[in-house]
Amino acid sequence: MELFLESIISVLLGIIFGVIAGLIPGIHPNLITSVAISLIPSILPNLNTFIICSFIISLAVTNTVVDVIPSTFLGAPESENVLSVLPGHRLLLKGRGYEAIMLTIYGSVFSSMFIFLSSPLLIRIFPPAYFLVRDYIWVIVICALLIIFTKEKNFLSSILIFFLSGVFGLIVFSKEINEPLFPMLSGFFGVSSLIVSMAGRCKIPNQKFEFKISKRNFKIAVISALMGCFSGFTPGLGPSQCAMLSRSFVKEFDEKNYLVLVGGLTTTNMIVSIITLYTIRRARNGAIAGILKLTNGVSFFEFIFLMLVSLISLFVAATLTKRIAKIFLLFMRKINYFALSLGIILFIFLAVFFISGVPGILVLIGSSLIGLLTIANKIKRCHMMGCLILPLLTRFF
Image 1 (cartoon, rainbow, N blue to C red):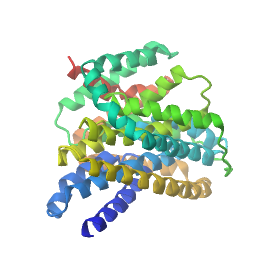
Image 2: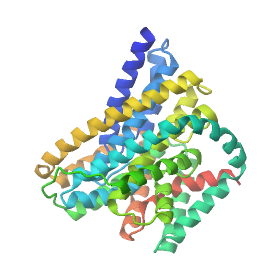
Image 3: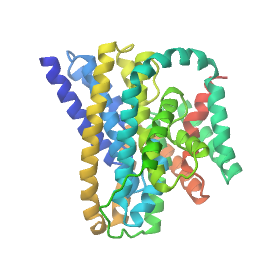
């Protein structure tokens, strides 16, 4: 009974911290995971490590849903949601911010349900598939990148940004910086977007609380689930890259379908990573990497429980996001957008200084400049994920 009560508390706390991480740009769930892993065992030495794992999964799943709010309203997403910025922000400026939020939530929920229903099959497929392709993953990643680049109008510029970000990532990871991903990703996808939003001085029109689902949206949700499996199974290819791949193969992607796709990819990537944790004991994101620091893997019972935790967190997060979005929409026009963006930028700088010190501030400034260069040249921001992909590829050689 005590273990059951602790599990409920851990899930509730995970949801709360997931909402906080989702709403505040720059506060990544990986940061909270790292703090939890380092502090909780020392504060509560008798606490079952699996309780901490439940907290991490609940936190991560909740964050993937709630993060759509700053992505839409502020143009400051986590790296996984970078492609949702422009479509969501465009709908917001057309008075359809609520529709943008709901489409993304729809993608998260329906794509994830497809994964849950398919999990018995995925459990059987993943181990043999992994051992078949593990020596050729670098080939898969390079081929996927080539497909993405060849679909770009700014072909050379996209490659330049990819390698510029990649070299920057190699330099950052070679230095002894505490939580290097925090300042680097905050600069690439947070501060740079906020600066552009401030410079634009955009005005938020009255919003319509309307939302419609089409059959096409449902098909996109299924495609999102399939690509989420590919993303969660293949290291180096995150939701952003898989969204670009999906656009390469599937026609008629308007901004609504794109939001469904990105919403589904972000959440299913997290849920599929739970399956990879159980089947092949490999981490595909920071949350699972944190769990592997606590345990060598999970049993079948623990796997079922973590899937249940993710399901509960998903539906609670979807409900909370819908309600929080309505509050944002009601008060957005009364808020000084410039002052809000400036306040968030200052908060990110203070948080980086507190966590990563002066080296972190230098990383934040450097990544922000690369982010601004990318935006100024109208290059898709997902190419800045070269900061993670290029260092990964170097490990294969």
